[in-house]
Image (tube, rainbow, N blue to C red; front, side, top):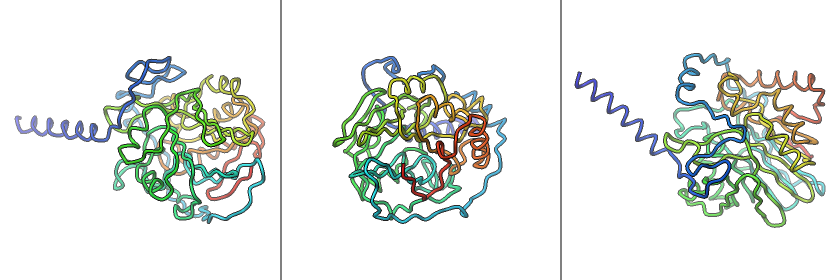
Length: 344
């Protein structure tokens, strides 16, 4: 009995030690309408599932089958093609990673080139698709936008590689700079919701999202999560990050207005009782597209990492069905192909 108790305490201690080791530095700043001095809150008031919900999800999990799919992989080598004045050239790498090129500026969103989105490369959700652009074929990267600190959006190995090769400017939500600075990355600026940062002659604004944050057991919601609005050459590009659906997007549409291009998530939505507060469904992505008054949108956050019960084809199928039911043209809201360039 004493031996079993010792083993149990040892396992608990080991888990807590790993949880502490993996936890990121936390934000320390003034209280606001979405920060109580310790934790951040969602604008819709709903929190991501807690320990009981996670257990229920694990017990009732009915994951749809997935397989590694290499057939649609497009290897797109970087080409010096002139970009029309005032336009974006957008290339979908996969998941939430895009290369955005415009006159004098190359941007990456939530870059991940690792084999797994996990603290360890021997375990955790593995890639179903290869990156649409090989890392070595990237052009010079000037700016990186990180929406939050989850492993599928802030990949340590990738940001270290980008820092060493390109030394880009990082824009991150409140509190996330502490993690990057521990990695030796100093070119970091933080944004709160509705605050703006100038980068050269461009403007970047942090926008609200419904999600959560954390890399270990002791940093849950202790750093912020957000989307971003980029204002470049008189045009507006919206990167929604990771989010559940709510009326916050109507507020974004009314306050920002006239968005030219939006990058909107559609995957990791099943089961909806568990994922709903933090991830939009493909159907809700249509509402989001309309709410923010986007002229053109591109889908993301699907098909690469198995993070929920839906598989890549479920997201694609419901996306196509939702386009029809919401009377949205495929040229207005696109399902992108990895490695393909879109001039918008």
